[in-house]
Length: 328
Ligand code: GLU
Image 1: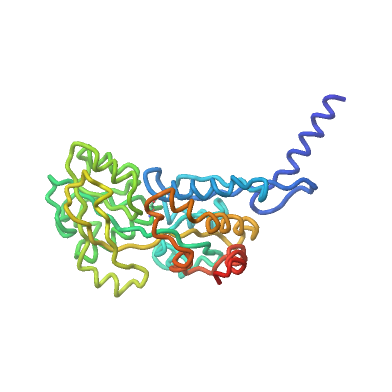
Image 2: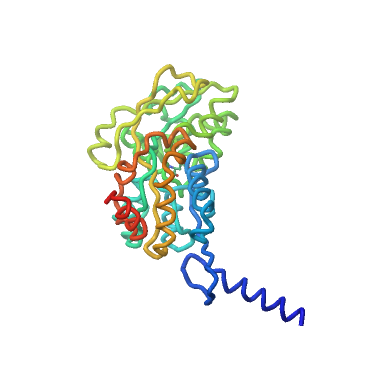
């Protein structure tokens, strides 16, 4: 009898659980839905951004019955592929990577256009950032010739940006530098340990990686990436940007550092149920002031600029919120 009751209870519990595909096993109790946001390395800004979003959604569990978790990943390219494969429901990705995957270019040249890709919103600006050790005599990107440079892991968004920046300076990443392809989360330590001369990272500022890199014994500085008119003319999704040096008092730069950049954006798939995307969108926008206070990189956000820089169609769940809020 007791055993029977236990099994009955267990059955009820299992049948109330459902995954992001929305399928439940039939129960009158509110069904619990799970979703995961793919972010980046733990010393980047995607990871805390994903954490902030999931916290806001999970706080409203009684309203939505959604449990949103965050996963540290290899970055933009990995996130897009995982969301398209149905392994993740959301991903934070660079705006250039969103455009490329939607159009079937760059890493998606062989796979073709990613038709299930859907945009939720834009987040904050990210800068293509190059940091070098002072003792390596690297004052412009051209000085990277012959140096050991981390361009980033293949799943990252920044690897492609590093290659474009090098090409623009007349350098072939395969032959002119000794390229390392490690995750950005390992790069700061590698620079401090003298195992690399410089590293590229496309990321919001401030972030843990460059704080770590500027906190060690080896003196380091940001290298300006200038003469980028060729990049801006060829690729409409890049824009000039500046790294505020005030965030890194231990870097040996004296002034803000010019470079180019993109926007971090939140993407999902057309397979993700509307109610989940609606909840995520609503919690970000309704709590925007709180969200902005969580990280200095989010300070520039407005409800208007969060709808700019998106290439993929807006997911219907997000659109429902934008219509309700009078934003679309
Ligand atoms: N932009 C980087 C990428 O797409 C990640 C930056 C971060 O994690 O903040 O790989």
